[in-house]
Image 1: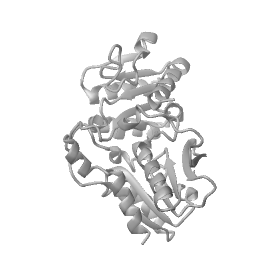
Image 2: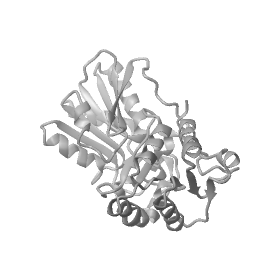
Image 3: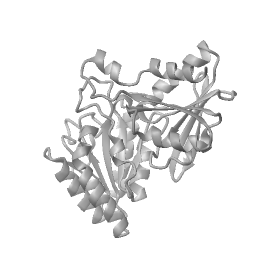
Length: 320
């Protein structure tokens, strides 16, 4: 099943079982959202799909109020970049209400994030780092290694305000099954949210890549390259709950680790994960985007964002 279809199924299930409201710009038919995730839902559930004017702080604030009164709410940011406009409502209202008043806040902010599409500097960023370390907010990142619709359902049911980081690159991709030509996937539950481990069949790893979101496909391509070109085995560990990092080490089976992320390498999620590994003596490397805005030109975007060739070079250097 394709990522986008499974995600839409999860949203529809929440509408059916919890009368969930979907709020966002152009989410109604015939448009169905900027990336067509909600296409068809307003025809089936006209009272649950609420199209709003271009005022992110206003309509996310409306969603926070609805959630505080007991509704299940999913708010779509047309591009994840615009989550900056909703940060005040998420950090200073939703997160605080859930903790100060001991209320379940069943609200999810969906953020289509990331580059590789030529959308330019203000429509290609990975800004989930804004929300890391905020008590009362959790960051969930679906990928092709997970079931994005089920993750969204878990996020809503958790009662914790959630930033839901969807890679734009993943929408048309097929979800991974339990095994492929040379790999197999294991799933582990941690605090209700799964961690996937993809490994070469019947082999111990020489290296581990830790990754989330849209770069899982790149990690798989790198795994294949090293298996066939250098006879080296790589594990891929894919967390879905980016707010819980201390348990990631439990799923790493070797002492050479590379953490990759689509956002800017410096001061990112990978730095915090790396800190926990370094404290236990594991050799860790990091890779991410350049410290630059993201150009619209494909040639220059390629230079700024992390590429498969970059990942291969970092691993080769680390194995010397």
